[in-house]
Length: 322
Image 1 (cartoon, rainbow, N blue to C red):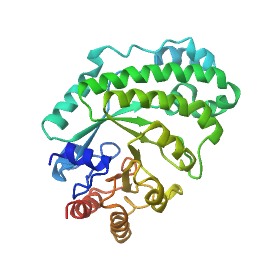
Image 2: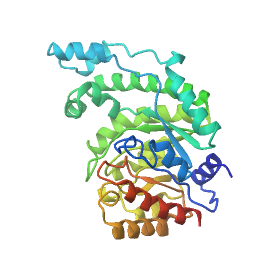
Image 3: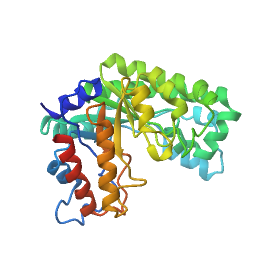
Image 4: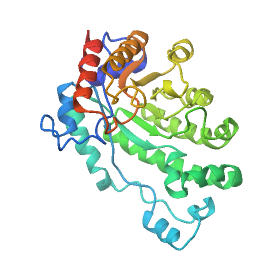
């Protein structure tokens, strides 16, 4: 079974007999200074990763114009942002890197390929600043709805092009959670953010591709929304933010898959090999055979040694493929 088939069957809930393996390892670590691997792709090949996380395509904001206004002391409010057109989404030359990555990962290695795409909240923090954005949820809800609708339309076209290029899954990054709760009230989420995710989700489902969400933190209050949108995969399901695997197994394991299980906040990269081994074994005991794709909960941080990363993936591949 090819890796893309293994991952697809796992997401659908058809236990294929082994657990897919992946990890967010491409950033932070000094691959160029490591004589054994030199690049993260060499590590991925050694451990026969089953997935590839693709980045690329056009950006949506005119940063030159935004920076010009900010340098003049203009506050980027929703009304100001609406006066700045989004950049074109349909210039195919902007997608060349995606085409190259698909050739490398999908055609040559048979991996399941998912591409990073905008959500509604996180991407606009770049324009507004996160503190201002949170304030605007209360001050300018009607104006934000216009901003979010425009963003959702741009995202839809971006996702359609990515689907046509041949990715397996659209991966929406939209951090909603703090360590203990949502960054905003549940009512704000349901009124201002969820409707535009549903709009995006409906578009992805029409393409026949899988749909996943990355959101850090505690998003327990948004899980009904995750079901409404129709997300097939959730990354990371953050135990350290109060999201227990018991809750997932009792209420959601028949609804969507988890991409995660190896915590970079508390376990991987801290030099405690016993704790690392025990935690990986615990998670596999709970989730193996379920809709579980083993992955890091976020990018591995630079305090993790390559020796510890190898230790973790020696054990992960053993447990996943035995």
